[in-house]
Image 1 (tube, rainbow, N blue to C red):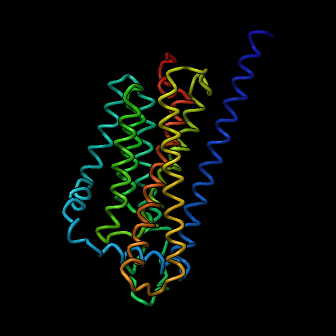
Image 2: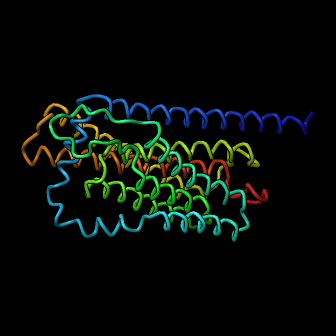
Image 3: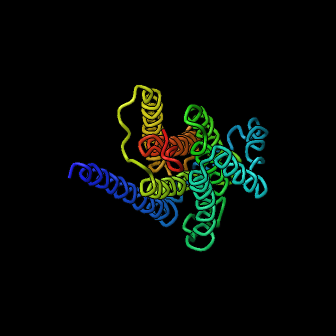
Length: 304
């Protein structure tokens, strides 16, 4: 009885982790649908999105060169190389399961985005005041690629480097999302939706990691302090940026369909950019929680 009871408790904890992560995945998928319904299938939602897009023309000439450099990094070839590189890092670390999970995040996120954008979601023409992109652009493919690769690399990175890699990755992912807006390629809802897609796959991979992992909740460890600080920092930034972005877009909603002044248009642009960055930081914070609490580095050999 003594030898069996710890296993029973372990399984109960494992089942709870799987349940919560599955709930997060379902909620994220629901959020994606909600974003589409609000910003694509309502007139006011389209107006707000397009006001943000119009605001990106302010000062575009001064930032278009660095924006183009960020966006030009992403291509089909670059995606293939990045996906293979993620797998290679995992295999070189003798973590084949972790490598496969990281590659699933990248491939699943990108394929889902393409399928949703071109086969599932449609865009009715409701904005008769000048829709700058009169076709469906949600979710953003570039943002999905950048953030999913950032997540994949962070997942396979050695534990001692994961925080650094995750920080660089989330900054790049957020910058790419904002860059797609600044270049006039995407509306803010497109980039936020892309972050939600990646977040959904992080939760789904977390379910698999919980099912395969040797344990669910790590014991208290003084070495967890840096993780705690970074997760709290990322979570705080995500909340702050999302609140600022939401407030700015709500103010914009009262000025559409034709917010004419530059300050109002810039506010719409800033609100969209803030929302995109906040969504990216939320996804990376979630990934760091999953990797630490589910002990993903132990998936392949059960060793700390």
